[in-house]
Image (tube, rainbow, N blue to C red; front, side, top):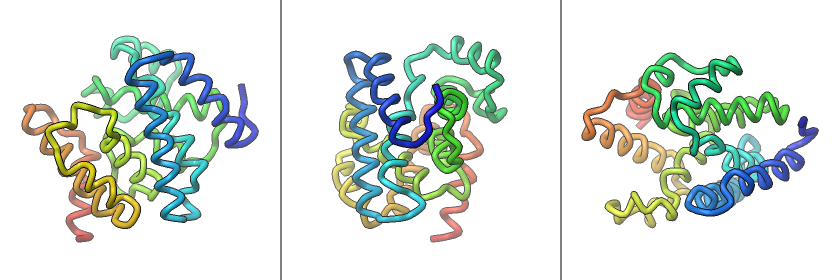
Length: 203
């Protein structure tokens, strides 16, 4: 299937998400993130982060989240999906984002590199992240359907700040994700480290 425009791609993804996740938390999370991304983009009013693009990226971001790491590795090899060496080596929850970005490019014919990058980097962040990338990165973390965030009581406040302090919220979430990874004694992805360092310089 080749989408001639974003509206066709959105229609396809809405159906695909419902087919892949007929019920449960991934279905709820995906549509919650997509809708919040669209609303945030509407409030920001940036030409480089349109509501349609934000909604599309939100729909696509976890399209392969339910796949096992070994199955994702097989798919990445078979499809020759571009993936950075660190995500490949660390594996786990870092494999589904490149697969979803590839799906947009290969299956839906999306050629908007901002949308592709937004989906590709939504788990790690990166240096020079666009407004659209920052929107999805933050909204994915702050989504209220993710009950695992229950130990962070200030999340509602951060959600309120999204529409007027996106960069500050992005910096806060980058820091929290790095801290969480360190506390779990896991390896840090270089993209997250570089994004944090960039944000510290900009502060």
